Image 1 (cartoon, helix red, strand yellow):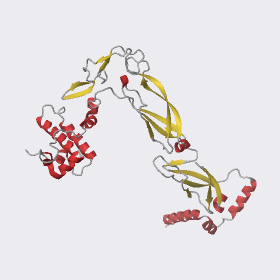
Image 2 (cartoon, one colour; image 1 turned 90 degrees about the horizontal axis):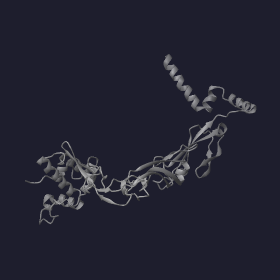
Image 3 (cartoon, rainbow, N blue to C red; image 1 turned 180 degrees about the vertical axis):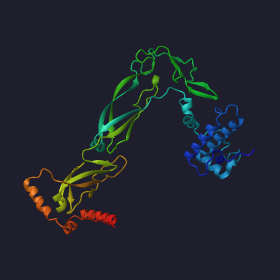
Image 4 (cartoon, helix red, strand yellow; image 1 turned 135 degrees about the horizontal axis):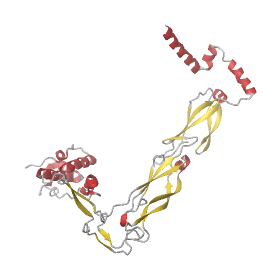
Length: 377
């Protein structure tokens, strides 16, 4: 009987990517896996067909030969690969580790379980996040036991686990499913401790507070993570440790708000400065800078200062600083100031003066008049 097209077997197109192939194979293998279909010869044949198709299409050179010559590329004497039944090229261990990891424990792998990854929230000021900083942190976690050097044994004597016979795995039958999982007695190590350590009671680890230095690179942002490999929890009985994930939390700044590589700030100015124009000094993260305010500047006007922002860890250039002008109403007026303002206000009497000197106010009045006219007409 002629073989089906490998692309048809996996249900993908000829232009399928590596990720699409892997996803399709997982779906096919899960559907036809013998453990899910005990005694079903058709499912077993389909499962083998899926494996064969993926073994060829996941290998770039084999896939190229298959696309050119079809199944003939793998027949003996055809100048091909001498058959596709060996499955030597595909990483099925990785596939099934992902596919059945939750069912089989650690994907069927032998050995003690790796230590857990830990998380730590590191609070920084905006200046620390932008410029970088070295911080010392204290992390409570399960760490390797010193008296037994993480082995869990008081005298160093370790025997083969009697429950799993040293395999580190046991088979559990649950209804129609046969599931492989780490041995509950030895935790997947395949070994049994004769005399447990008095300090850790055979676990090989104890709870401690570890002090670490974290080098925060310049330009990190709120929510960024720094991975410290091997600084997580120690694994049981000498297993490899997990990692520590340090999440950056940037505190709210009194002046600046960050938006990616850019900074934003409000710049309050007096009425006279807005009307007549001025040159003012504003703060930046680099020190001070001068900002020229043109005459007749209104509230909400935004001025851009190039390269006065942030150079993040993901970019090569600094962002900009955006200054949002806010015209500030004066308070605590002296009698002289109040008198001057009253004289100044008197010059705006009349509709013509309002239109000439306060365009936004006149626009508002005209709009309201239009509403009144439509309501009374």
